[in-house]
Image (cartoon, rainbow, N blue to C red; front, side, top):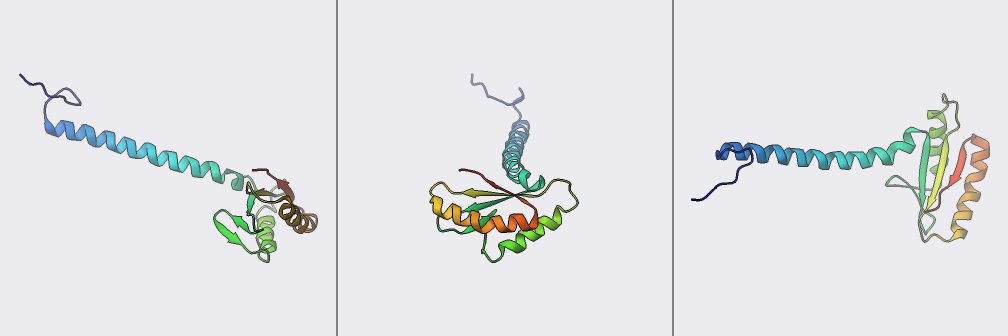
Length: 129
């Protein structure tokens, strides 16, 4: 006598296939939720008026995954200021240097950003990696 294992307790192959289809769909939904939750958490600062700019070892800037030329930075900051003009709190620019960035490069970028901060009334923050 051989016994068959089934998902629901019957030996019908159609029922077993349906059970596996439901389990596969649930596994895909959980995987998709995990990916989307990570994206939502990553985008939360932007929804709160915080623009996170990453600084590389060579002094290059990135906003999300897009490189920003230093000449374009005032235009990006102007758009941030205009977008958050109706909000009572000033917009925040958070500079995040990569782990191996020399402090000289960080200070050069801070010196470049501070005059724009005073002129355009936004808050500059430095976040250590």
